[in-house]
Structures are given as structure tokens and as C-alpha cells.
Length: 506
Ligand code: NAD
Image (tube, rainbow, N blue to C red):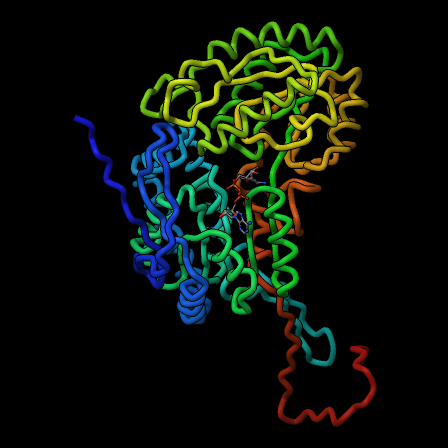
């Protein structure tokens, strides 16, 4: 007897309640490990988004006016609920994204770092004060929340990225609307319940599910003051340009094509282990995944490939339910097909496949969206697989003759999210960190994602706008600085009128 899966109909979270979609449009949510549809997520209409914005706007003043200590107290309760519900969160993330449990746990833990930083918001929004700048005049600058702000998130970190985008925004007094990825909406809805349990007032946290119609309303609606976007580069650019046109503050993080440069003096066994985790973890669906290995010198390349071949062929691909698995599926059938097409095209363009993930049994037989670990040698600039972000486990080797050539190629690439160098030569590392035009740089660190209390963002096509994710910059991005000059005259004083521009020399 075949078991029939119960397909859940999901909601939005508006005004502190789960609200069913009114639009009649839905998108399928898959379990990528089995290929089955597990839920239907409503795609909000413009009217539904407007209604959610109105509720957020109405809730904002009371939240802004609450003391910073009371707001921090709610964020602390939320943080504790995240750890108490770790198992349920892992289960949801694995089910809708296909990640392994260990990977999901890592993502939650890193997301909690952003909440920890938000607990310290009172310190980060402290202002500045100057006394007696003119005759009995004091001046202060204070940070005020913006009002209703929106976050639009990608599928590949169902919790870490939304937490990084929204925790500080809430803690400093804004009302936040999250447009979660329609491919992983269940985690965001569960997080909504945790905010409610933590005591967050209704309307301060909203999840609106939807596609580009919902996003476009968030971009255009005059009540939305700021947009925090994380996703692919073409959409990031569109969000930045459209949001700016409608007068919003926008930070839009895009894709990555991250290189690992390997100097001849590096410990190649250590390099191989670092590369494998950073390149194939989460089926390479990380904006900071290593895409391209750049060994310096032919001998370094040949020795490294020998070590890698054996390790890569031993990797286990499968469903998260199997604890032995190193990584799971990609997010969709379409994604699987595009990764395989990228490998095919690289061969047509003259590259050679060292490890072929297209040939695994699970790739051919399973209904899940699996692609095996693939390593492609003799990749060159100009080839599609070098230029484009491939969001799946097809990784490249670009052989370079020198460190200078590696730096030149990396700096010429359109994307500049993360990069790393493996070497024991301090001078080479220093040259690299100084000259490289990439936002997040590692030295003997495979994935240089900064901890939550440092700023996170790439350069070039990996980020549009000036803000950062994670880090103290979030407190700046989600507040506006007001500068107040004030004078309290003693009753006997009378300054009379003056028509000259105030000089403050009196
Ligand atoms: P995506 O760009 O397809 O979608 C991201 C969000 O934008 C989703 O909520 C989606 O609904 C919305 N969206 C998609 N198309 C849109 C359109 N035409 N108009 C308006 N909104 C639209 O990205 P994804 O596939 O969900 O996520 C993977 C991408 O995100 C990769 O490129 C990855 O590198 C990138 N990413 C970057 C970072 C970073 O920090 N730089 C972090 C995580 C993911």
C-alpha cells in the first residue's frame, strides 16, 4: 500500500496570527530529499501585502516607545526559545531544504549569534552628546528606528539569514516584514510562533509569503522605509535599483564565486580536507561555498588532485535521515538539471571532469534532487562554469602560474563575496589580503564567514548598497540619526533677535 502524504496548506503570519492566503495562488513546497510535495504556500496579492504593512505600521509607535531594556528582554526570551526548540527547527530545515541535521544545527547556531548581538542593541544605538557648543546650547545625536522595514530572504539558509536580517531591526524598535523564500517557508512560520511566545507585540514581526508580486509591493509601498535583501545577483541588483528609485534604504546581497588559492608551500592534506567541506557542504548551496580551487603551479595542482580524487569519491550523498551522509540534495529538480547542464557545458568548452557526480546511482535512480560531488579541471576564464555561480556541487580547478595571476583573475571577476588563501608564507598572505578585491577574506580558513558581531558582506556584484548583514552595521542600517540642538534659557536671559548665521562663537 502506498502512503499518501498529507500536503499542508501554509499561511502568512500577520498581526500576530496565522492568516490563510486570500489570493488563491499557491506554490508547491518540496522535500528535496524525496522529491515529494509536502506543502502549499500562499502567494500574497498586493492587497494582502498592503494589509500586512498597515498592521505593522499601526504596531510600530508603541514598540518604538517601549524602553530599550524591555525590548531587549523580549529578544532574550526569543533567543532562549530558539535553543529550546532546536530539534524542531532542525527537523523543519532538513525537511524543506534537504540539509543534513549537523549542517542545520550549524546554521541555527550561527543565526543565534545575530540574536545575541541584537540583545546588546542598547549599547549599539547609544548616541553622542556635546555640552555648551554655543551660548547654553547642548547638542545630541540619537538613533531612532525607521518604522516598517522589510527583509527578503533566499532558500539556502531558512533561519540563519532571516535572523541576521531581522533581529537587530526588531531590537532597535522597527516593525519587520519578512518575505521568506517561497521554497522554505515553514521555518519562518515556526519562528513567528517563537516571537509570539517571547512576548513580541502583534504586528512587529510579520511573515508574508509570496513571489515577485509581494516583493514588488514591498519595494514600492511608501510605508516601507528600508529593504534588506539576500539572494542571487540579478535579483539583488533589481531590488537595489527599484528600492532606491522608490526612496528606500537598501542593502542587497547577491551571489558568490569564491576561490581558494593554494600556494606550493601549503599542507595539501589539510587543504584537501578544508576544500571538501567548504566546497561540497550543503550540496554547495552556500553563498560562501568554495567554487574554484586555484593551485599555484602545475605540481601543486597535480599533487592536490591526487589527494582530492580519493576523498571526493568517498563522499556519501543522500537524505538527511541517514546520519552517515555528507551532504544532501539541491533544492529543486530545476536546480539539479541546471547543475548537470553546467557540467555538460564545461566539457563542451574544453574542461576535464576529474570526479563525475552525474554518474552516481542516487542521481539517476532517486526522485530526490541529488547531484554527486563533481570536480572539473582545466577550467579557464571565459567558460560558463568559471563565470557563473553554479548553486550545486560542481566545483572547478583553475591552474595559475603565480600568486599575482591568482589575484588578477579574482579581482577581474564580477563577483567578490569570499576568498581564501592556504599558505605558510606570511608575506604571500599579507600581499593577498592587501590586494584582493573581495569582501570576506580567509587565511588558512576555508569559509571566512565572520562571526555574528563582525560585519558580513561581499564586494562588486555580491553586494549592492552599503549596509552589511550580521554585525554592528545592522544597528546603523535600521536606524536614522537625528541631531538635536537645545537651549534652556534661565528666565532672566534674553538673547534678542539676530539675523546673522549662527556662529557659536558667543
Ligand atoms: P533568489 O534570488 O532566487 O531569491 C531570493 C528571494 O528573492 C526570494 O525570497 C524570492 O522569492 C525573491 N525573488 C526571486 N526572484 C525575484 C524577482 N524576479 N523579483 C522579486 N523577488 C524575487 O535566490 P535563491 O535561489 O533563493 O537563493 C540563492 C542565492 O542567494 C544564491 O545566488 C546565493 O549565493 C545567494 N545568497 C547570498 C548570500 C550572501 O550573503 N551574499 C547569502 C545566501 C544566499
